[in-house]
Image (tube, rainbow, N blue to C red; front, side, top):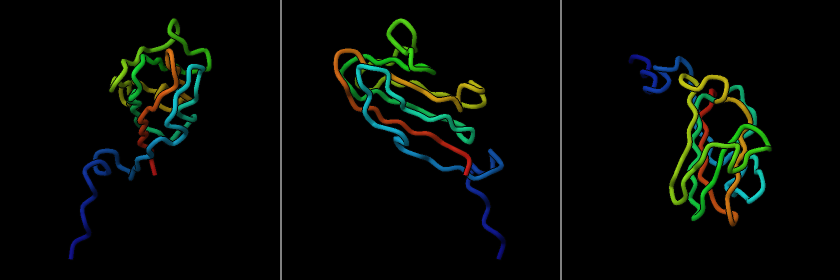
Length: 112
């Protein structure tokens, strides 16, 4: 019997990977909140703002509405992929919400 073929993601990447859901937190506050740790094994992440108010994402604790990437309420998202965004993909990430704290759905894909 032949060895099983690698799953498509592993075949494309050349190594196995795994998904981590909300690895740091699922709640973003009205003050800068760390949503992802620095992770040199991360190859992709997506952060979905499930809250009813606008949010912002940035790569340090100075994230704000004047210093961050806007993330729309009720399903707006931002993502980072190693192939397109390079070094930003592995960096620590912070987020902030306007008006009130809320839930975000955050997934990172990392090399296993």
